[in-house]
Length: 284
Image 1: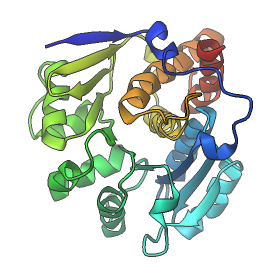
Image 2: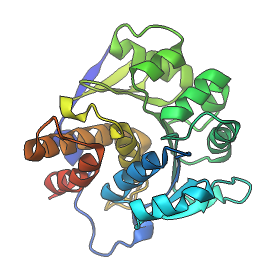
Image 3: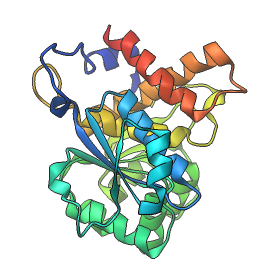
């Protein structure tokens, strides 16, 4: 099975220095469907990841009672009530769904609305993956446009999706690609990204300090944020490129945070903060 290594040299071929004339529309309009009662922080961390990765505009779809939490936690983002009968999905470049979403009936409808109702690139994580596994929504995923979906399971979520124990990580990532039709980012030490049925990339950044609550929410935001952006050529970063670059940048941000703060005290918010510095080092 062909495998490539994700290095800074590779990422630098995709993450380029920005044109001086760009505006926020060039940097991506992102919708994040995340958060539930007691889990609003997941939505905040995901939005921080997207903005620190360079998004031009981030809107967070949450229950209305969570607006004050999100607006206080990330004032640079705006909120919209999570009612997909009123949300115009066509006005967004990218949608991310799942962090802290819960598995209520409203959450199930949210996942269905995003997967079936949005034709652009999406990132599917956390509770959205659990909903797909428990409600058997694999057909909906496979019906999406080719190359427009990224899933980001951790090993437990991968087992639920595959309904089997994880054996070889690269094999598991490729099996998930085949089952879902989605670019699969299987998280963990040396995260694996499957971009084709038998093509994988292995990440080279990250450290044990990143084993902390909310780290994956930041990663989802970073990937979504990258997918919405235009390169100097005018072409948007593809879902595949965003997955490959996103996992490297996320790990590099964690490494920079650990260097400054140590592994023991590192928290997800630190990873979001150092995402900006990681991008500065890559694109500078």
